[in-house]
Image 1 (cartoon, rainbow, N blue to C red):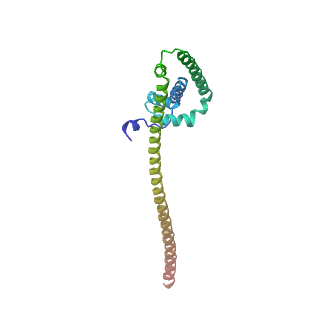
Image 2 (image 1 turned 180 degrees about the vertical axis):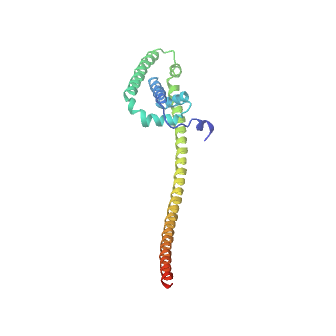
Image 3 (image 1 turned 90 degrees about the vertical axis):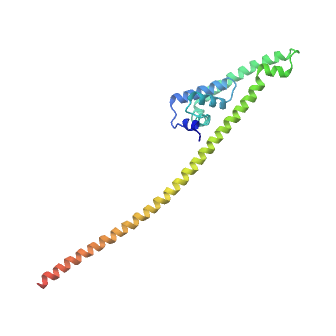
Length: 190
Protein backbone atom coordinates (compact mmCIF):
# COMPACT_ATOMS: atom_id res chain seq x y z
CA UNK A 1 0.00 0.00 0.00
CA UNK A 2 1.12 3.47 -0.67
CA UNK A 3 1.21 6.28 1.86
CA UNK A 4 -2.02 7.94 0.72
CA UNK A 5 -3.97 4.68 1.05
CA UNK A 6 -2.47 4.02 4.47
CA UNK A 7 -3.38 7.52 5.57
CA UNK A 8 -6.97 6.94 4.47
CA UNK A 9 -7.33 3.80 6.59
CA UNK A 10 -9.75 4.25 9.45
CA UNK A 11 -11.94 1.76 11.21
CA UNK A 12 -15.07 3.10 12.89
CA UNK A 13 -17.35 5.45 10.96
CA UNK A 14 -18.59 8.47 12.86
CA UNK A 15 -22.06 9.96 12.52
CA UNK A 16 -20.61 13.06 10.86
CA UNK A 17 -18.73 10.90 8.31
CA UNK A 18 -21.97 9.04 7.55
CA UNK A 19 -23.73 12.38 7.07
CA UNK A 20 -21.06 13.60 4.63
CA UNK A 21 -21.28 10.32 2.72
CA UNK A 22 -25.08 10.41 2.48
CA UNK A 23 -25.09 14.08 1.42
CA UNK A 24 -22.43 13.44 -1.23
CA UNK A 25 -24.35 10.54 -2.74
CA UNK A 26 -27.73 12.29 -2.68
CA UNK A 27 -26.21 15.41 -4.27
CA UNK A 28 -24.53 13.35 -6.98
CA UNK A 29 -27.67 11.39 -7.79
CA UNK A 30 -29.88 14.50 -7.82
CA UNK A 31 -27.41 16.11 -10.25
CA UNK A 32 -27.76 13.15 -12.59
CA UNK A 33 -24.43 11.64 -11.63
CA UNK A 34 -23.80 8.14 -10.33
CA UNK A 35 -23.51 6.89 -6.77
CA UNK A 36 -19.92 6.02 -7.62
CA UNK A 37 -19.33 9.69 -8.30
CA UNK A 38 -20.79 10.35 -4.85
CA UNK A 39 -18.29 7.91 -3.33
CA UNK A 40 -15.45 9.89 -4.94
CA UNK A 41 -16.88 13.19 -3.71
CA UNK A 42 -17.31 11.81 -0.18
CA UNK A 43 -13.73 10.48 -0.23
CA UNK A 44 -12.43 13.91 -1.21
CA UNK A 45 -14.48 15.58 1.51
CA UNK A 46 -13.60 13.09 4.25
CA UNK A 47 -9.87 12.73 3.43
CA UNK A 48 -9.68 9.69 5.73
CA UNK A 49 -11.84 7.42 3.55
CA UNK A 50 -11.24 5.88 0.12
CA UNK A 51 -13.96 5.76 -2.54
CA UNK A 52 -14.06 2.00 -2.07
CA UNK A 53 -14.61 2.24 1.68
CA UNK A 54 -17.32 4.87 1.05
CA UNK A 55 -19.01 2.51 -1.40
CA UNK A 56 -18.80 -0.38 1.05
CA UNK A 57 -20.20 1.72 3.91
CA UNK A 58 -23.05 3.02 1.73
CA UNK A 59 -24.01 -0.39 0.38
CA UNK A 60 -23.64 -2.32 3.63
CA UNK A 61 -24.99 0.14 6.21
CA UNK A 62 -26.65 3.27 4.85
CA UNK A 63 -28.43 2.60 1.54
CA UNK A 64 -31.42 0.86 3.13
CA UNK A 65 -31.76 3.58 5.77
CA UNK A 66 -31.92 6.31 3.10
CA UNK A 67 -34.10 4.59 0.47
CA UNK A 68 -36.75 7.32 0.44
CA UNK A 69 -34.16 10.13 0.20
CA UNK A 70 -32.41 8.29 -2.62
CA UNK A 71 -35.74 7.84 -4.42
CA UNK A 72 -36.39 11.59 -4.05
CA UNK A 73 -32.95 12.41 -5.46
CA UNK A 74 -33.64 10.13 -8.43
CA UNK A 75 -37.04 11.81 -8.97
CA UNK A 76 -35.34 15.20 -8.93
CA UNK A 77 -32.76 13.92 -11.42
CA UNK A 78 -35.49 12.55 -13.70
CA UNK A 79 -37.47 15.79 -13.51
CA UNK A 80 -34.32 17.74 -14.42
CA UNK A 81 -33.54 15.28 -17.20
CA UNK A 82 -37.01 15.64 -18.71
CA UNK A 83 -36.59 19.44 -18.69
CA UNK A 84 -33.27 19.00 -20.52
CA UNK A 85 -34.97 16.74 -23.05
CA UNK A 86 -37.59 19.42 -23.71
CA UNK A 87 -34.84 21.98 -24.23
CA UNK A 88 -32.99 19.61 -26.56
CA UNK A 89 -36.17 18.93 -28.53
CA UNK A 90 -36.70 22.66 -29.01
CA UNK A 91 -33.07 22.98 -30.13
CA UNK A 92 -33.58 20.23 -32.72
CA UNK A 93 -36.20 22.32 -34.44
CA UNK A 94 -33.50 24.82 -35.30
CA UNK A 95 -31.88 23.61 -38.57
CA UNK A 96 -28.69 25.62 -38.25
CA UNK A 97 -27.13 23.40 -35.55
CA UNK A 98 -25.50 20.07 -36.22
CA UNK A 99 -26.22 17.14 -33.86
CA UNK A 100 -22.60 17.11 -32.68
CA UNK A 101 -22.85 20.76 -31.70
CA UNK A 102 -26.05 20.12 -29.72
CA UNK A 103 -24.47 17.37 -27.68
CA UNK A 104 -21.41 19.52 -27.09
CA UNK A 105 -23.58 22.45 -26.03
CA UNK A 106 -25.77 20.42 -23.72
CA UNK A 107 -22.79 18.44 -22.43
CA UNK A 108 -24.95 15.30 -22.18
CA UNK A 109 -22.81 12.97 -24.31
CA UNK A 110 -19.56 14.08 -22.68
CA UNK A 111 -21.06 13.83 -19.20
CA UNK A 112 -22.24 10.27 -19.83
CA UNK A 113 -18.81 9.23 -21.11
CA UNK A 114 -17.12 11.08 -18.26
CA UNK A 115 -19.41 9.40 -15.73
CA UNK A 116 -18.67 6.03 -17.27
CA UNK A 117 -14.93 6.70 -17.09
CA UNK A 118 -15.28 7.78 -13.46
CA UNK A 119 -17.33 4.69 -12.73
CA UNK A 120 -14.72 2.44 -14.30
CA UNK A 121 -11.90 4.16 -12.42
CA UNK A 122 -13.79 3.91 -9.16
CA UNK A 123 -14.56 0.24 -9.75
CA UNK A 124 -10.92 -0.43 -10.61
CA UNK A 125 -9.83 1.30 -7.41
CA UNK A 126 -12.45 -0.59 -5.43
CA UNK A 127 -11.35 -3.91 -6.94
CA UNK A 128 -7.69 -3.15 -6.19
CA UNK A 129 -8.59 -2.34 -2.59
CA UNK A 130 -10.67 -5.51 -2.32
CA UNK A 131 -7.77 -7.51 -3.78
CA UNK A 132 -5.40 -5.98 -1.23
CA UNK A 133 -7.88 -6.68 1.54
CA UNK A 134 -8.25 -10.26 0.35
CA UNK A 135 -4.47 -10.69 0.40
CA UNK A 136 -4.32 -9.26 3.92
CA UNK A 137 -7.09 -11.63 5.00
CA UNK A 138 -5.28 -14.59 3.42
CA UNK A 139 -2.09 -13.63 5.26
CA UNK A 140 -4.06 -13.28 8.49
CA UNK A 141 -5.65 -16.69 7.93
CA UNK A 142 -2.22 -18.25 7.36
CA UNK A 143 -0.93 -16.60 10.54
CA UNK A 144 -3.95 -17.82 12.49
CA UNK A 145 -3.44 -21.36 11.18
CA UNK A 146 0.21 -21.25 12.29
CA UNK A 147 -0.82 -19.95 15.71
CA UNK A 148 -3.41 -22.75 15.97
CA UNK A 149 -0.67 -25.30 15.33
CA UNK A 150 1.53 -23.62 17.94
CA UNK A 151 -1.33 -23.64 20.43
CA UNK A 152 -2.00 -27.33 19.79
CA UNK A 153 1.71 -28.10 20.28
CA UNK A 154 1.75 -26.10 23.52
CA UNK A 155 -1.38 -27.90 24.74
CA UNK A 156 0.30 -31.23 24.07
CA UNK A 157 3.40 -30.03 25.93
CA UNK A 158 1.25 -28.91 28.87
CA UNK A 159 -0.51 -32.30 28.93
CA UNK A 160 2.88 -34.03 28.91
CA UNK A 161 4.05 -31.84 31.79
CA UNK A 162 0.89 -32.59 33.76
CA UNK A 163 1.53 -36.33 33.29
CA UNK A 164 5.13 -35.88 34.52
CA UNK A 165 3.88 -33.93 37.56
CA UNK A 166 1.39 -36.71 38.37
CA UNK A 167 4.16 -39.30 38.08
CA UNK A 168 6.46 -37.23 40.31
CA UNK A 169 3.67 -36.77 42.88
CA UNK A 170 3.08 -40.52 42.84
CA UNK A 171 6.80 -41.20 43.35
CA UNK A 172 6.89 -38.62 46.16
CA UNK A 173 3.91 -40.29 47.88
CA UNK A 174 5.61 -43.69 47.56
CA UNK A 175 8.83 -42.25 48.98
CA UNK A 176 6.94 -40.84 52.00
CA UNK A 177 5.25 -44.16 52.60
CA UNK A 178 8.61 -45.91 52.34
CA UNK A 179 10.19 -43.38 54.75
CA UNK A 180 7.39 -43.92 57.28
CA UNK A 181 7.80 -47.69 56.93
CA UNK A 182 11.60 -47.41 57.29
CA UNK A 183 11.18 -45.28 60.44
CA UNK A 184 8.82 -47.87 61.92
CA UNK A 185 11.30 -50.68 61.14
CA UNK A 186 14.16 -48.74 62.79
CA UNK A 187 12.14 -47.89 65.85
CA UNK A 188 10.93 -51.47 66.30
CA UNK A 189 14.44 -52.94 65.98
CA UNK A 190 15.83 -50.76 68.71
